Length: 399
Image 1 (tube, rainbow, N blue to C red):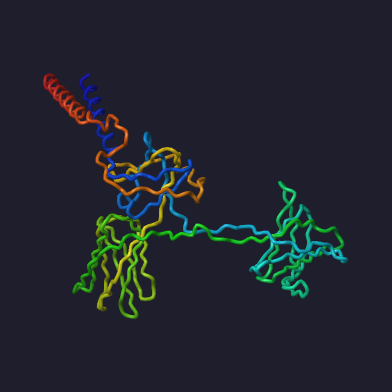
Image 2: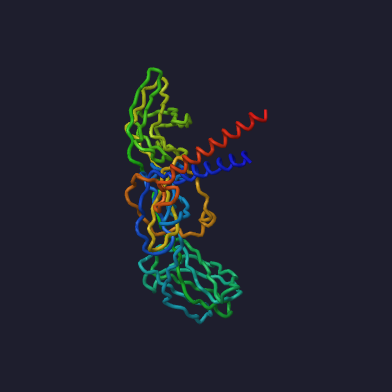
């Protein structure tokens, strides 16, 4: 029975300590007001990153009552999508020869390499001759015997036929379809697809500039001590180096953990060094000059991957970020399984200046943030000590 009591006391003590550590976030920031319920993105700034671990285990989002699930996403640097731009059909008729004559206007002399025709379903094949003109009178050949595939849609009464041809900027494009005395195709509209880049964003964020000191040793090695001031996340290092017209040197970057990363810098390359993410405030660069004059590093820039916090917020609620808890464990949320279902274009939610928590933890005063915590903790320790002493005394009697 005494053993059971001692075990229970240990469990209570562990629970209290774990709960205390779970709430011990040293800093926080208030999020901007939510104007519409839905998903938002919060940009991870260099300043914000300096308060978090490199895997963001010590970050939480909360409202007045509960913790809000979130995911960390890399910002897409830029990608392309197709947009459909309709082209005016100037003429669509059957000539005396039975051929279909289709003339499409290309306003502004746009660069065209293909035209998409929307055609009512027809399981037949045709060929077409394509020509161009700037005045509807004089025509010049662009392509001949371009195939119109035998194609149709199973879930719609129309399909899209792409006609490719050499790049052209004629104001008018004429397509003559050879029907070979057969009935013509029913052409509904003409359009062009244009690829546009959107959400084009630099995939890296520049951190505040570090300071550094340089020492050229007599052993042919240049030592550069770098001070990053705050533990900003770093995923790449850009060096400005002045040296001879031609050089090729080995270089090591040594972190506080003792990890060493080797690079080679040459006179005909860019000095951007990709690194596994780290957040050391001080680190060392060693450049091995051999018998050559030392290289001179005139500038150091660090960057981190552009990341954003994505979460679902409700209008009317006040949210805040909790950050900087060395005892925190990385949370696992169901939301991570649905990351691909969340739009890449989300409204941005800002946050206030990051402040130190006077009483780290949630806003509402619970048992674990109340004035009763330490008295109860002391009582539990006394009970645990009593049961341990009592158990030891019983064991002495039995022996």
